[in-house]
Image 1 (cartoon, rainbow, N blue to C red):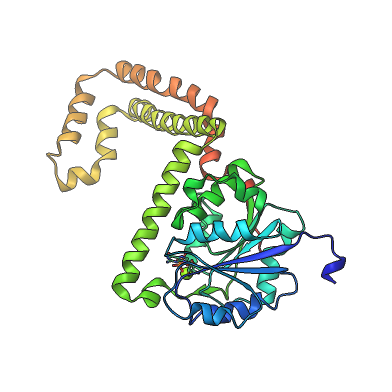
Image 2: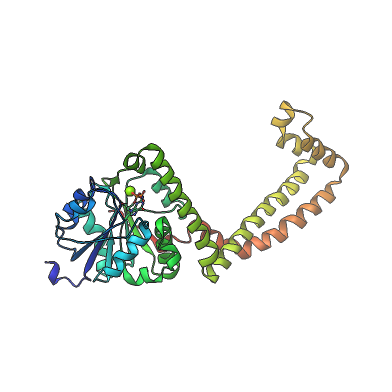
Length: 330
Ligand SMILES: Nc1nc2c(ncn2[C@@H]2O[C@H](COP(=O)(O)OP(=O)(O)O)[C@@H](O)[C@H]2O)c(=O)[nH]1
Ligand SMILES: [Mg+2]
């Protein structure tokens, strides 16, 4: 059936570092999948029996000279891949099935999108529905070589790679789709490497992810998006200005001293000598209502004007990337 479909051919790339006890489960699914045309396992200098386990399957096996990191291993896999679509799969994933693999690969193989990520089931990913900057980092993803080639070599190193893939898909590609698969999980580092080594590995990974994100956001961001972000920050600041100006105007409306008393009733009951409250009360006492009104107007209206010019960019901060990142439920 697959042969009749007009889809691109697929190479699965599996980076593996000391995964002898886990990679067999993964290869059982991947090597037998009808949609996958080639499997490349890149052994990242394992010292366990990973090679022996891999050789039980009909897949291509290469080994790095030493432990070079996940990003390097993935890049080596892509350079060996014969096909345009690459499916990356970690060697420690649990719960993989032909159906899950199918769902991840199809949209890319059919040319609908440049990258599809199969997310493991973690609760906090759901926050991504609200704010688009929750990073979606996961091992199982299908993408085109065209997207891969856009990534600078700097990011094809250890755990920098997934942040960079998402970023380049959004800003230099046609975005990506993702889906959270309830049954998908993995063996955590602390269990694989022991508590202390695992924890050290985890922090090393966080460091790679965080530093890559910083560099991407400040160095690789396209000029137009950088300007959009600046305008969004200006919009936020002017909103703050409007609220401040509004407080001055409200103070005139309600009577300055009453307003300060009402606004800080809690502080006044707790600590009557709070210096800020005392200052405001003195200020309300000695300043005429018309002066306070003038201050309010001078703060409120220029900020309102700036806000009207820039507020559309606020959506950019929260929702702006949504159209590039689509949650493929169903
Ligand atoms: N931790 C680690 N994983 C590597 C390395 N090289 C390749 N890998 C493989 O990369 C995949 C993801 O690694 P893992 O530590 O599980 O990271 P996580 O799943 O993103 O938390 C696994 O298949 C590893 O075997 C390496 O140097 N360190
Ligand atoms: Mg893992």
